[in-house]
Length: 299
Picture 1: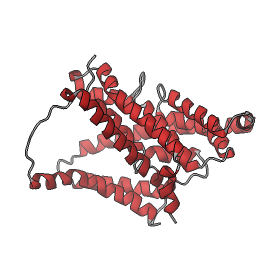
Picture 2: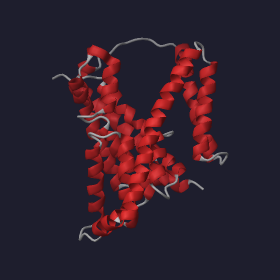
Picture 3: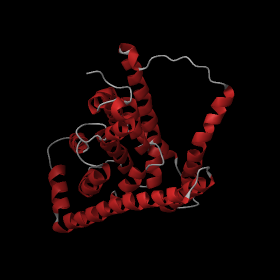
């Protein structure tokens, strides 16, 4: 079956979890005790850019074999049009600067930075043309609904984590895994493989909430850096959103594209980017400094 060029759109959406600001990283630090959100956000920059570069390479190779997926359309774009296009990304840049600038200048904590970013987005919304009260209420209702769902998952996972700790399951599991006669990298690969499998049929937040209370004490006991592990886990769960049967990003793209493309075509089009993502994870595993160099430069 012929694949679809919109596969690159579904795959590119996963980079949002790596390149700050990242809501998934906030959830990760809630359950991974001792991991700095600021360092985790900075650590995702280089792996995110590297993954984007591998996506570009995968796209280039794919188009070499199937140029009809992206037919060349020659159109002249004026300098004025290029400058005006910046206006569309301007509000996003302002929000990012408000969040990250406040955190790294020490003006606010990561939690407060999220509130500052939300307020900045709200002000931008009020200043944009086409503002109306109905649209505002729809946004508020949608936000409350999504946030409530996430918090219910988090509350349930925190109770589950407490139960595991009190019952001794976490300690017993950690002792068993650390007592295995294998190199610690084998244990790491086993756990990362579990995240890759879970990502194919579970939602990202649910995966992190349910597994981090079990795996982070074990990985910490084995001497792995929490920030490095965080980047690897986030990369793997994001791979899950483009893999069947529950590829969230693929279904979102399908909803936007309508009848012009099928789910099978999108999943087929995503496959080269899936391979590129696996390569990116392997590189970060082999060269931890890709994720740890920038956090190490922080004061």
